[in-house]
Length: 418
Ligand SMILES: *Cc1c(COP(=O)(O)O)cnc(C)c1O
Image (tube, rainbow, N blue to C red; front, top):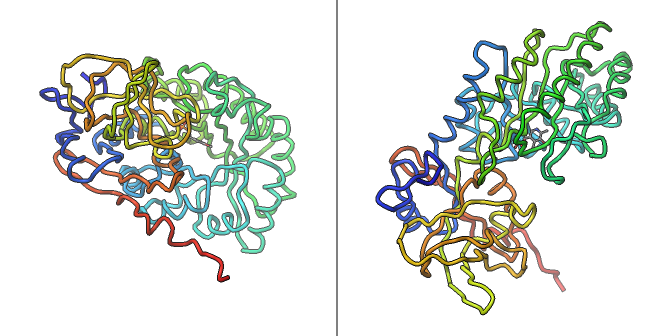
């Protein structure tokens, strides 16, 4: 048992749905990301069905994994999207997403991105400062448009997650303090090209408890009440993303319990509920498949040097994040403790420390839970072409992104004429 439903062993060989990872590696090479369509669909439907008959919109946070095949799958299931750049907007449109279901988050939207989004008639801008609001109002005016806006409020709650992915504390760069948001909503008349349609927050990522979400929700509800008592017509409440997943022994709430708790805490309001899940939709729907190049035994340690590296999956180097690493073939041999590392010239280039595995050089390994913030954070460091991406749909294998070539990688560079 792997512990990941769509990625499991059959006769000691690891499969994705009905396809063996060994077959994928021999056909498409390594490293590559492999996703399960069934796992993606199940995660989306878990959110959607937990909302039952409540007026809601799930806005998938594109930055978690922005491959257009994945965006298209979610769009077909009815999903909206949370974007953080003009580039992500263009991806969603190319993937067939409905612009009328897009919310645009981020602290540093530039004028060009605002124009793109206004042109596309997106659902809402999640505005993170008064300065941004002034610019958005001006651009909307130039385009003779009205921009729909939620202020992203910083509810000042402790998400109890890794400091780099905690966003809802008053020290963070994100959002607007509730008091200030109140003042800005009251000054709506100063922004004739803005229509305030919502309230928004997002307190962080990889949360493993419901409590901080409920604290944030309760602060947002207070603000909503104030706004309504002052005559503002708020149409939706956006409670952000952030639900954690199980990488190893975390015990995050289930999607159903999380959504049910949000619905219960807001049952007395009639506004539409928005959420912006990223990781919890894609994280456990993908793995990174890699091959062992060399085993290296030093007096201090055993190293498994693999062909995937920190440029392919940055989370271990960036957050000291833990990903399960499973053998694609369970060989039943002698177990040793390995440092699983990549070829990049950095000591931070590791995928896992002290993993108990029985390995031979040439073996394949699956780095689990790599569907979120894996490919989307990958880089070309060490001039390593980015990995291929594969989607498995029952017994069918689709390449959803070709492996990058070195030619593509350097195509836009220029040497000086003299
Ligand atoms: C990153 C982000 C999300 C998604 O967070 P997850 O932890 O992946 O669910 C949602 N909303 C905003 C504004 C974000 O920046």
